[in-house]
Length: 175
Image (cartoon, rainbow, N blue to C red; front, side, top):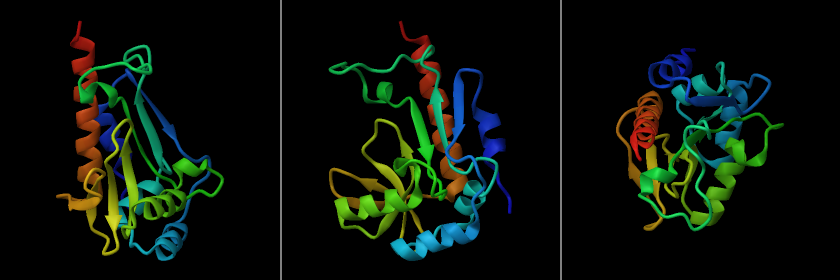
């Protein structure tokens, strides 16, 4: 098991961020495999490494003091609403929106697609998923289809945390 979560967090985050694990107790590869079998996907090894590691799923946000949350009817560029991201957990005691099983079942019911969410950018209707073959893809909500994503789960997490940092820096520079 090689959990790269902390390494990637340290590379991109500073004191302007808050990271919250989605479960208090460790989770097992068996839990992840059982969820995958139940929802019809094969979760990649890197995802299992992340979920079974120090952060059994995580929520990463820019602190509200740095990036005030949008209010209803606020208008701005799309990126200015993307202040957080989260992965998922297999821990049954976590809230439903945090759990791999709940997210997969809800996704399939809404879209009819054989895939399961693995990473979500807060404020973005498109979500990263694993398809039935275990391939990383991105759900395009307007077209209701999956599009392939290059790289593995670690490269996805690395890229999305880097982009979150870039958005945060841009927000801090804005008047």
